[in-house]
Length: 493
Image (cartoon, rainbow, N blue to C red):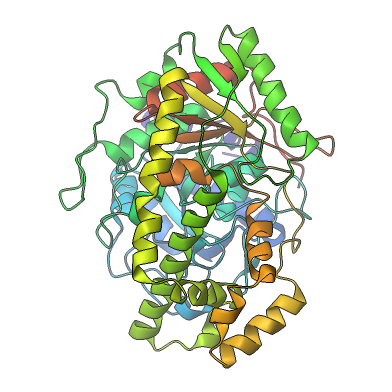
């Protein structure tokens, strides 16, 4: 199969070809590898090749709904036994997984052929994919811009046609942000729906979850069926899976939905005119489709939610660094300065303060639930501006020098109380202020690629649903996809 034919199909379509024996898994794999070798040097999307492992697997008898379809894993927690999991960090350059993650096992059980791991920022802590260990990953639509993060490698690979769908994860927007930047569909599932085992009961108190980025809605829906088809016996929840499959839900009409929309940043920070235009375009399209659309937003204290999110985020970073140092003997210099500063910020927070911040998640969740009593969905920009340029969000030199000096003197507690530090935290969240709400509240949310900037960059819009509203989100996404198709759009590389 040549690339032009391969690119015409999504993952469901490729699986159908394999099932009909019109193409073999080996043929699909070689086409995917050839495309990766053609474009990855410019994108830096795949950071660890698994070609030999994949070729051996493609030569075996495969079964499952995606039997024979090439696939990529995110290089963060999606462990493949016997293969390095680097998490974008120099400290884990020699770390080899001893067993499959639960989601990886389910993808393998579905017949997927994994042939590589995709780039992520160190520990997935940024909404861009730029790592000291693996370098910057670039957006296929414009190589000077970010593909978003932290699933930026997966999004770049899908947008560039290497695979139709790839593994991703989302702890603060890391599925939706790169989907928005790369013109893809990205759904963050509800808390507890997708298993996090066996290494974890849940990531980030349930704020994070695994999933995929894809070119088509039906691929994401079918992948969700694969991931949740049975409960995790060691997990903390028994998820309430609907009687109808997610794939079937994506084929149904959504009915008339009541949708509230806002373009106001919850942080009070600026929102680019193009991001406002993206939401206005979506609202017009929804109105045309017969939905009830009006300006509205949940009564959530966005600044407090951001602070509570960062309290958890910093603590998780600190715990991750401490565990890696304990188990590998890594030194401070093996970790990026930005993450060492996040860890230092966590150490300045006392345990009662952390518990108080964690308890406030309930306040934010109930405020969003009150909104969903009036509206089926919340519509916002996915990101507050077009994809940033590579290097644009680098920590300013003055703050870097101050941070390095204070780390050496063990005085970082002084830094995290300064205006400069808090301004930098706000600056890093300002481009992506809309996505953390769904993570802390555990609600499903999706980014839909309905808009392009004047410069030709994708700029998705976000829909946040109520508890267990994946069927509604998928049905609406399919309706929007049929009205304004996006899957055939392809960047010129």
